[in-house]
Length: 487
Image (cartoon, rainbow, N blue to C red; front, top):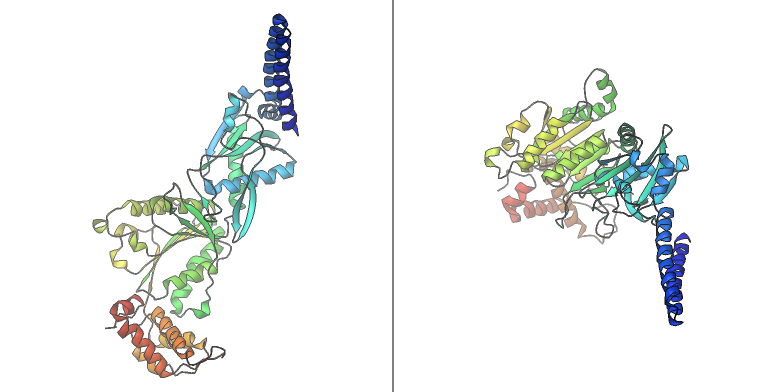
């Protein structure tokens, strides 16, 4: 409504003045036409100055702060675009609690520009951001907040320098070049106090807290990384066939450390921990990781999906921000090869720097896994503080293979005697046994119409399945599934 009024006045002044000048000039009164023209120009300038002041952001800021603009401190802090939504949500919450004013300002106009110009009030634009799974929340893009902290007024806004939320491409927040928290306060010290307070607020109430996050380099080659909320995997202890000692030790290392971090801190210890899981392919490392992160539902899980330097940096930055956190780095041997055989050590160096840089006050557990511990860089694998515990995953013994075969075939309701297959699968990994049983069930199901609750897996089904995997598939297939004695 105000914009329509402003436009109408502009139209009346300029068009009306032009018509009056033209009409007077046609009547032959040149002096009067000149005077009307001068009056129109002066009136236009006056209205321009007045309307700019009325519809500008500066007067609202000056009135709220109670000081002239040149006596105010303007401070900007890069908070990273991954925290942009968190900061806006915190400002929105404070604004509602204080019934504070919220103004619209040009999306790419910095708050400090108020010192030299008077940006015009704008309509507030909104964007959707993924919060939990498929749930979306709406946040304003270009708001200026007039707030108070401990009775002291301040003005805040989030300034985006080019990164954006791409809803149609992927429901993922791009870290881009970063976003900036911009503040106008009575002094620099007051601004720093506000920044510290907002950091605490956003960290505790982040849309990412307690989620499982994937951090990756964008596929289109753009700057920054994408952060995607993914579903936390489900894994249950009764479906993990491993030596009890492995499960007990990892339970104590991860769950107990996270649960008792306050007790550790009381005695001067941080809960930071580096764990290295190693063993042949398919021995249960990934399943164990899934079990650990599924049993720590209140903790943030961060998974870098590539080993680029910036991806690792952003992942550890999120871990520090959202602590207590669990970082998962699978197949770390792809990154941490011995330096003499690696084409580039940038990623390895970044990983070691980040592990060294975990502060004593942070609560981050880094779980790494590898199929090839023998090629790991000694500086990573052998230095205390980077890897505090290595856990080997053995191939299942006879008793374990029996339990695994019964577990994988039980879902089909079969009553096949698994004892003869214990010896035939000597050296097989759990992954190989699972695929063997799955293949046998598929073969057996071809004899039915697919409606039976139970499928009778026969010896011939198992024979055909192992033939396909070991003989037809050859050594490559068998080895990939964890059956190194094949062929």
